Length: 250
Image 1 (cartoon, helix red, strand yellow):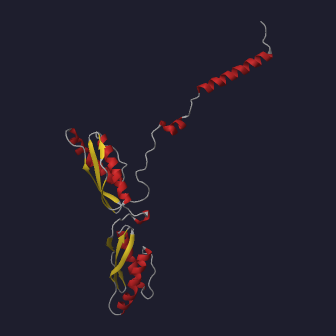
Image 2 (cartoon, rainbow, N blue to C red):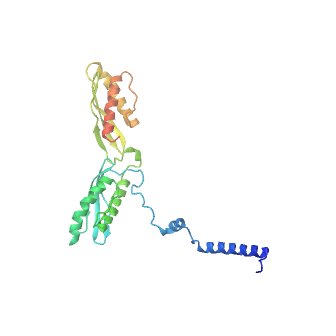
Image 3 (tube, rainbow, N blue to C red):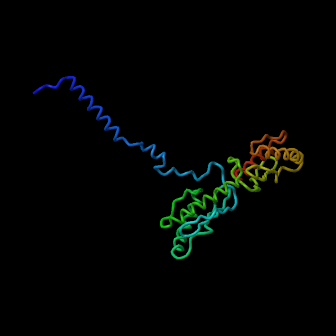
């Protein structure tokens, strides 16, 4: 048998290698899974229902009605202290089998909304359409409540003025108790409803309390300086002021 020439063997080997590479390249997908997902091959990640750090404003707010295959769903929220305290469906599918589905699903959805403090709640089994409509209207209500909240997210979310009285602070010269008015998450007014009195305390109180009231409004916190000559009254004022702030939600 005639032996192959070394040069011919090298040429044949090179041709086989090139053919193999071409075959592998022809089998490679047009795009990788990552690019297919980026192009819309997979569902997008769910958008956060919290809408950022801005709190929700206090009061009652009703979301837009969400139309479903079986009827409209509309959610109303009661918000206090920046939190959902009550959720209810003012509209829900009714008539025929919908009555049974609604009576079973809505109480569970209401409870879930209060617990989650968002529209990120699970659908109730057997009430897929009602649950989806509830979530949609709930998100609408949350958006409206957020729009009514103060712009500063660090101020607790109180949208309406309210008055809070701190606990009584006992001092060497008598009790001190502070009452504050809070609006838009800020102290708009501070006053001492109790302060040391009698003898020299009357003069100390009349001099110190107005200054302390002003300092509380300016600082927006209980971190205020003591008034010279009224150390005990100032300390009691700060203690009661902090109590009032704690009750107001910081």
